[in-house]
Amino acid sequence: MPFAQVGELQVAEDIRFQRREWLAERLGWVVMTAAVFAALAGLVGDGPASNAVAASPGGRLAVEYQRFAHRQAPTELRVRYGEGSAQQGRIRLALDSQYVGKLKIERVQPEPEKIELAGGRYVYVFPAGDGPGQVTFVVQMEAFGRVAGGVALGEERVALSQIVYP
Amino acid sequence: METVLRTAVLYALLLALFRLTGKRTLAQVTTFDFVLLLVIGEATQNALIGMDYSVTNGLIVIVTLLVLDIGLSLVKQRSPTVTKVLEGVPVVIVDDGELLHERMDKARVDEDDIMAAARQMHGLKRLQDVRYAVLERNGSISIVPRESAR
Image (tube, rainbow over all chains, first blue to last red; front, side):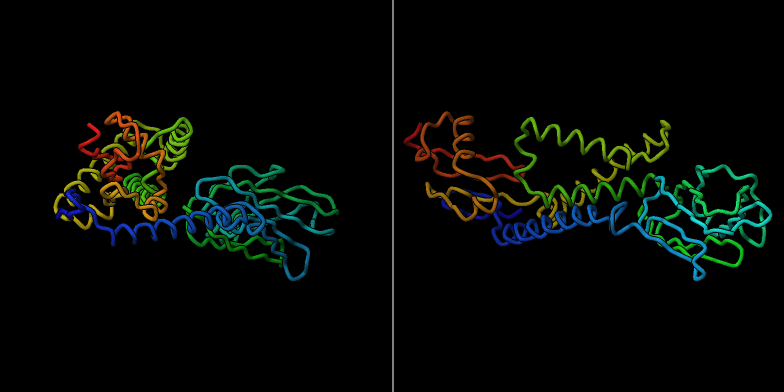
């Protein structure tokens, strides 16, 4: 590296470069601070901006989920259904199989009675009465980027769109 | 494959983040800096290893890091520009006895830091005894004393 002469001192100083570095440093601090606030707001994980609720047009089915999730970390889908959703004492929730393929279902609460494959969907069957209820799926995302999916209850369908960070 | 990519991405990110944090941050390790480093190490570890705790995976991470390091050192040897970008440049903060306050502020260095370096390296007693002070690439301050101070 060429030396600059500062007084009697031979030193590889490059004050123009140094000034640009200081500027970049300050910009970096701003970006880092912004990242912390984005994380607090829930733009890169859980937080207010991440909480989302999608409801079916009929209003019988609603899914609470995280808009921004992390890969290989647990996240929840809370599926709520309204009164009179059960047919023959069963609730049948269908998850798109292409969505299920991008995640791992860690736990379903309550435990389903059985899981059926029907028309390219995973159908979770729960014994249920006539009242409203909630089913929670604890899932772990395996893919990253934009992950779209859907949950259906009979004719009513809710579409989900999540951003999964690596 | 994923391990190598993970490692490379984290290496680059950490490099960029520490460069942007600035020289002063890691040169003089205080107790708190030490704790900070430990915690950063912990956070990095999980991101590097993922959920594969095998010896093979650990070795892939280590070898990838070493190869990246060797590779960068080879590039740095050939390109002064890359060296500047990756390691920064030294900056003169005392020029012939004159304190360059604007540079000191920008670099977050004060008289105390200069005097500390002057005492440690040369046993100097007064700021006037410092002829040149340079904030080096690694964040340490090197001192050239006045001839009369010896």
